[in-house]
Length: 306
Image (cartoon, rainbow, N blue to C red; front, side, top):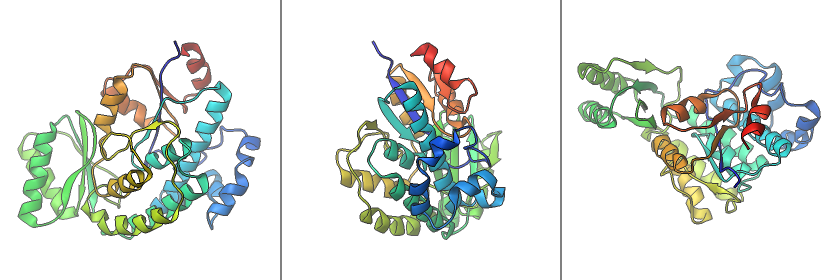
């Protein structure tokens, strides 16, 4: 019986200069015109030759990771002659999953996530911390306490596993939540190198603007099963897909629940894109048979198990 295949796409933080260099030039050339028509800047050149400062701008990072992950996907499914049973993506990666599922065109997705990045850059500034080895209830209580005391925003943003939750919000409220956590003997609170506090109410205006963009693009029902960040569930119709993409900006990523669902499939987990951040999260969520396309031996490794 064929193995169940989950393909997961990464979000921001996986980018690096040259992340498409391992793919054949003639393969990338197939998509060159479509990429050029999608954006008013040379995305391929930034990925290959740009500065880290340019690539790390949210409005550039998002289309860059989406493009890299999608081209990687197209390359491996053709090379291995496989189809996914299940698709998902972490935050931005959900858009890549929708392109892979033939729900959104590559052109529309590149334009949408570029604008999504611009809207996020224009939002109120804030900060994010990764909280390790702490139960969700303690984290939620400390965030709520800080938020009520200061009347400012701080809340869980990425519920990645039982061992890692990221919080986001206004700087003062985030720092107070961290103080409360340390008062509760929480040892590991790691400040993330971001200026855009994603997946919290500071993204409310960005979400409103994004909703107008999503109304203008064609969205189709997914070819493959796809589960969303908002609720770790599929969508029954196109309106639901749009709504979940909008709400995703202000609500926490339910990655731990997504991993729990994938675990029930007892299949192969493939992270498709630069680096292997999602493989690490899969491991902490007790997923087996984890593979990354960023591995030099990925093709031979996956051929052995299929």
